[in-house]
Amino acid sequence: MGTMTFTVRMDEDDVKDIDALASKNDRSRNDIVKEALAERLAFEAVQTARIRRGLADAEADRFAGADRISGVLGKYAPASRDKPVPSDNSA
Image (cartoon, rainbow, N blue to C red; front, top):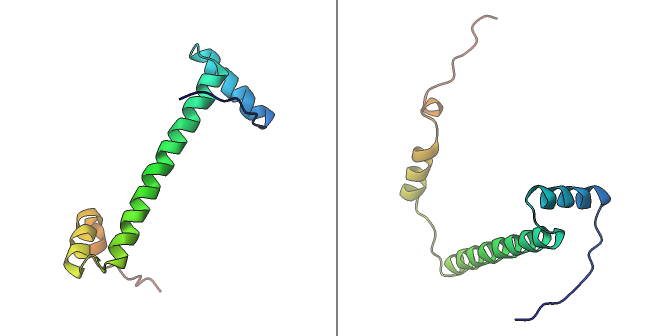
């Protein structure tokens, strides 16, 4: 795979931040930007794949049942949510 050169216009403060990060890590501006773009592209690829799998499940009518949803909610909901909210009798 070859390389290409292209120009990106950025806010001056962002460029200063990139330069400071590059200097702090003894790397070039190019290295910092290239790594950031590669991470973003990888993130987008993963998200797109997840969305496509979800859409395929929806099109195939594969949805979580009530038992599955209750189990997940029970796992992550704080126990205090199960307790009734005290009423204010001071009025």
